[in-house]
Image (cartoon, rainbow, N blue to C red; front, side, top):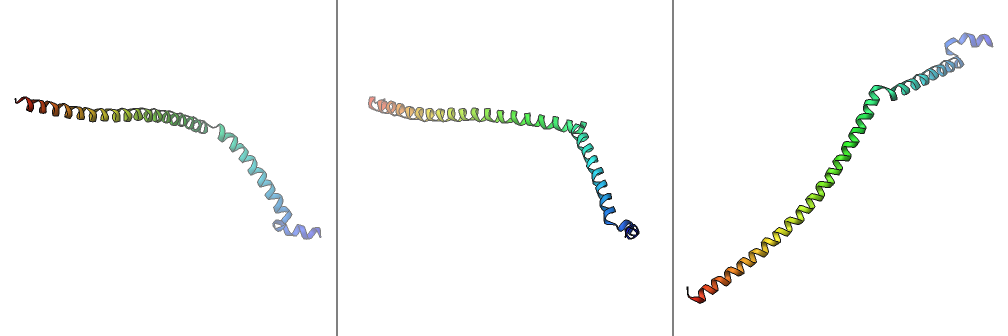
Length: 109
């Protein structure tokens, strides 16, 4: 029976399984090395720095946006107040002119 197994050579499944196990172990080792180098590589450090910088810029932009929203709200409120004042002044001017015209007419001038 042993001679039958030896005759199979590359077709022996046990031999193929052992070779595959060895290849898997080598691949896992290489992957571990790549992961270790990859996370500490200058490229990854630069990417991390860039991500941090972009997060800070986003935070700053959100703060500026909130400030602008607050300023805009105040300006809208002021504008509405001024528009109401203009309307009130128009009414007052109209009433004043009406009184003056009536007064002038009555005086005969």
